[in-house]
Length: 416
Ligand SMILES: [Fe+2]
Image 1 (cartoon, rainbow, N blue to C red):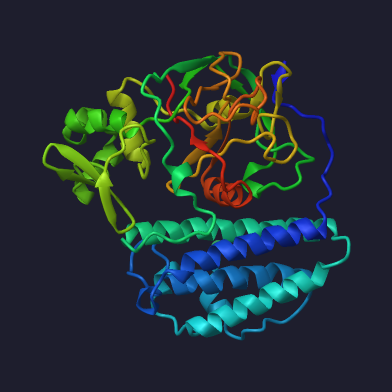
Image 2: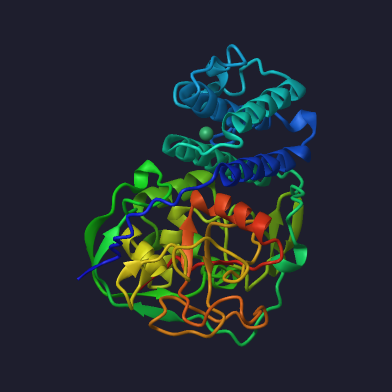
């Protein structure tokens, strides 16, 4: 049996109101992230992936204008010369510190005008399928850049952005000291990897679902924690050549790393820098900001391995009782407070909602979150779901905004 096949074939008709709410939500997050930056920080520092925040600001508006007003609407740009600065397909990122940018005020005026015109195009009428696609694309693109802005601010040690939806208590839940990490069994089989026709929105790199054969495997039901990763570091993992691949070892040596980039040794203990603050490492917290090379070396040390894309997607989405993939643990309907229990995690690298009803091998990866449970938020037969970068952060931000008091958990990334 081919598992993960869906014959839904229905495109959900998103109303203009929902498209516009999503678009405005994305903009609000973007602006909140920029609000905390001083003018002197808007150009940032030159470095790979460290886009200048002033470029980020204009680029999201340019992208929206390009697809919604120019492509769909046939309009001319309202900011002549913008293509030469903000077109990331055709202008090298190496030039981003050399442009003559509009001022911060002018940039805000430009992207606000684009947003207003984008709203005006479809407000009060039924959008076409093309409009549904490109409006969703523009909103998701802006959320992805919100992720990038957050990464830039973390890397450069800027203050933590003040997001109106951030809930400090939700970000620091009570810890269940009795919880023990464990694996779940996934039976394998032929699995439909990728997005099925009929999904309301699909990025082109997920097209289209095709069968892949997956052997039975086991996967951890919860994330690798700081404590687990620290054991690797304290065991000299960064200095043991045999644990690293050739490219990983070369990267580590060049970077001069003996531990994770944002970890700081303080005598016998470890601290972690979060934006401009140093704090003691939280042992239970999912380890974050780990490169692929480091994850690979950790797995070798722990006698594990990283999952393949197919294994990950299968563990995260397949309903073993029906053989079909579910968009969410409860099915294909959108998240609501009735179904979702969300934890806020600013470092999101991979996220998964978990059952609150205890672990069950048939529920792939379901785990207990004792002490955080609010019974009734999830049905008892739920399985976890996950999103991966670049989906992780836009989904996280969307969830934060819509479920500010909720809980969300990061999902494990290792299998044996
Ligand atoms: Fe972009």
